Length: 396
Image (cartoon, rainbow, N blue to C red; front, side, top):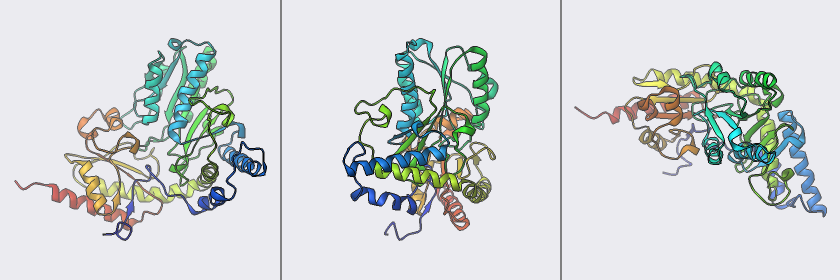
């Protein structure tokens, strides 16, 4: 059967979103007409520089920062690496010893965060992982207690990519700022907001963070481009070496079509997030209710403080990797966990950290709804799950 002709229900929106038409139109002429290098001084290059500057200004207006505070990267992974490794390199260059640098995070973070933290631990930086509640949120009292005179950086996801929990970033930033003031410190606060723009406000003035990572491919923009927005007090050094592009923080010729598309996608996402979130949240809540009516299904993460399109459940005794394959045959796309955590099944480290229940962590499935998902799609998906569970029961 032709894949494109059979029914398709996309419920893996956290992994990949389609590029919207408005964004494609912004990008179109930049592939073969206005294709210049922004570093060139001839007319074609000058026009390219103008496009780059306009994209930077648009992204800055959307995030409510200065244009100079926008760094274009290859995606969320590179933005997270630049935020963590780049800030540690800057601290080391300023004379701070590795042993005098502590970074606070959690065990729920995206692999691009956890791997970056492992990298700086290897040079002697201390990494403290604060505990989370069973719903996956940072416990404020434990977070406050973890802060120390050596704390130099906090990195926490705004939206968890796997279970969809929305962290109260503003509350935690206020705790950090009070600790800074009491102890005469500078503590940078970074948030991975890659899963947020379609559903939540991302203005850096309201969140009060120092650095924010974004990925255009997660908000109906092109894949292969991201943003690190940063405050002036967030001093960074590059993690790649090469030319002076992006204020020396991201060398290499800027991918102009992708950058223009990213700025447009982010702008549109933030202009529309309230209506979109309200529309999808209603369907999500109906989906959760139908799933919880199935024996053995439990919800991972909170009902309320959860991003509008995320449904993450554990199904007792079920091989959910096999379930994902079976649903794919029925035309339904979903996943067992974050795509960047690996393509296969196995233990969900995020769910294990939250619940301390290895059985739940071994049987997770993540549905992240697209805005186009209908109530009929949800009912079809629930029916397909029930059919798979019935077929999986062995006769006694």
